[in-house]
Image (cartoon, rainbow, N blue to C red; front, top):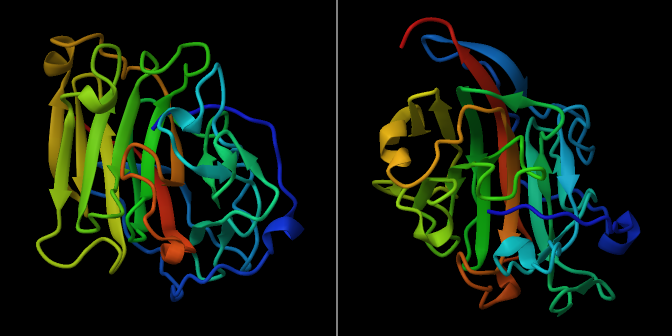
Length: 293
């Protein structure tokens, strides 16, 4: 994923502020911190159905990702990100629903009339993590052309262009492959579709749309470890990275949650019957290590 900026906004009326259909029951938030870690920040998305995520934690990227002559957020994506409730709101059952929908008439994107709207939330300028453990409990949508993601960018992004700012892809999913997710790192000399640091993790049965799963990363000055449901599935060491380029993971990073539609990752949807599509976020948590590794 690559971030760009836009300042266009939509009216709630244009999108119809209906409560998203989540299908989610009331979710408990009682899990203890993992052994050796202390909780330093969390969002359990408690609040009334149809309300916004806490603005002291989250801001939004908005628009179709056109900046410096590059559109589609660097990946030819077809969604227009909004700040509106139909695209991102609390379920009332302890979750955040990020919903991709058909775009309303009259909304223009770089490729013509917009086909889709969705949301991208970030903790930039609010919550940043330098080393530590970051996890989110998610239920993913399914459908070819969907691209749900939970990831992080280095806080120097903007002043430092991508990929030199660093990127940690905790979870990305091809909607056409609902039983598999991938984790990856990007930086100078190891970025985009050519990065050697990417690893898939498939479920032995079922898929990630059937239930919630916990995705995480823990990292320090020596390595990055990616996890699914508490088990490490991929490790990248500093030494491996430095054979390709500079290690850029000794800085604060911020969290991003988004649901993209179309583009180079999983292609454009072959049918809009997959919409509305929802990524449910039960919680996001940040930990710091309490002792030696």
